[in-house]
Image (tube, rainbow, N blue to C red; front, side):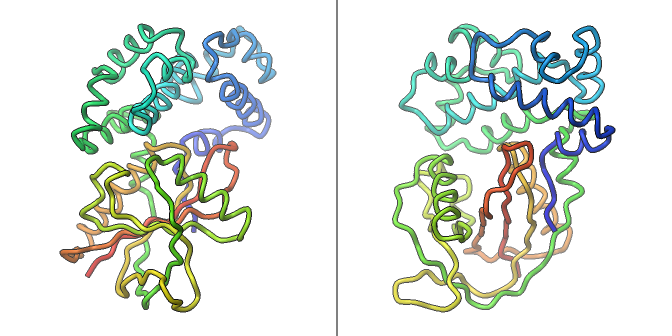
Length: 299
């Protein structure tokens, strides 16, 4: 069973087919122009969605619990946060322009207002390995829900987990110097396109809070039997969930829920526990999401 961690999927599902089609068109139009500082007018967005400009803002807020300008800024800030974490070589001005902000000053104002910090502070967190605090920033950029929890966190509470007892599994490791999540996604698409296989991602639990470049991870694809030089995934019990993600926010919320489920099930984590992730063949949910399985070794 695949659970969607894409807030828009759940919010749009409650609409009639006509209005669902209109707001899917609006979101796609916004996504196509999100990197432009000269963003189209809201009248143009309304026109692309075949909604009266007079009603567009009110209807958008009724569906998504925030005005369209806030929705746009929040998604732009997620792009910024990804870039600040994954691309230390880029200047803040370059990142601001790539995310559609008119200047680094405009970005600084948005970061202070929505996250309470600066680009430099985020980069210092990255340099010092403060991933837990960075994850909290991503959760702040979740889709607004009722109360303090985001829609992604609410969806995570509803996830269905399964406990699998696996024999030894084997991974054909791909030699790759992975420093960013974008490089992982690129490899996943290439594997899916060329070999019709899913990307297997395997790492120690103790590495989870380290920056990607410092993790002792192995990336490749599963084999049906052991071959020379392949990686052996230990047998045992793994608590798992399969989801569709469109953002880091949903991914973090799902991992948090996976740990909570382990606690509720009175499961123990081995001292040298392993985690597994699988990026399945790319799917289309608003053309922006990936389907993944997350697994946590338990005893």
